[in-house]
Image (cartoon, rainbow, N blue to C red; front, side):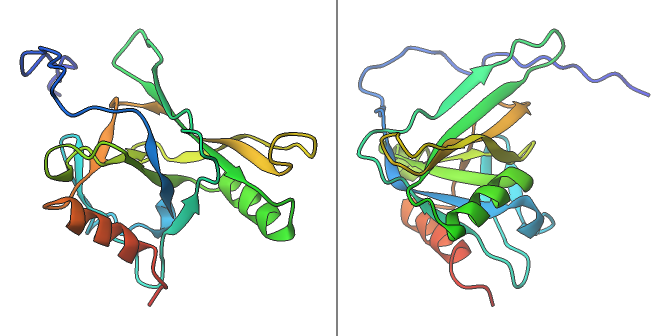
Length: 192
């Protein structure tokens, strides 16, 4: 058995040009799909870019609206393992109503694993950095889901978390921004 090197080195100069597109904040909608609903044979990834995301026949993704005017604290944190690399990726979610539908949604977020896509305010060159992905490698699930009747929203809040992902960040991108956005909207349309 051959031994594989785990080392990756820099592939370009890091000049931190202030004119390079960057900004904080994300758009209002997130896109979720259960990992069990993905057709992995037809879905593709090249390096740090997912170029095709296909649902199994009869399955679909779901849109989740961030109800807050504040930017959710999406974080990616290095876990500093002694061997290889691992990152925890966290996407906060809020479900406003204390309702039967949201109780079912919270249970689903806790018991299933998801791929979650968020849209950055800054889209980058042709939209290449528009859509960040959490859950592609290890799956993301609900963590610290709480309902607080005396809190700001009076409903459910929590985090969708991927733990121990081997790459720092992945992006969904197909040809250009418009094509990528259309693919996400189609993923969340009614199942055939």
